[in-house]
Amino acid sequence: MEDTKKQQEDFMKEMWDNYKVTNDIEYLARACEEAPFFGQSEMSLEIAKKLRQLKS
Image (tube, rainbow, N blue to C red; front, side):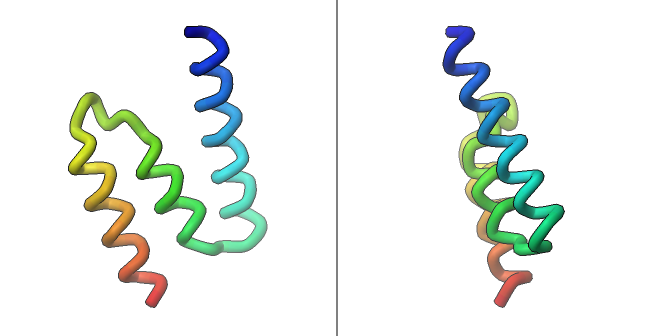
């Protein structure tokens, strides 16, 4: 359980760090897809979709 939490934290940090360097919204979209959003997986996918639309 701890290993999974650490992996998630590392992934989120990587996505945020990459976004800060590149300003590429794709990193935020990928982070949203992996975020728990309190059990609302459809919400995470919708946010990622909206972010990608902004990128276009």
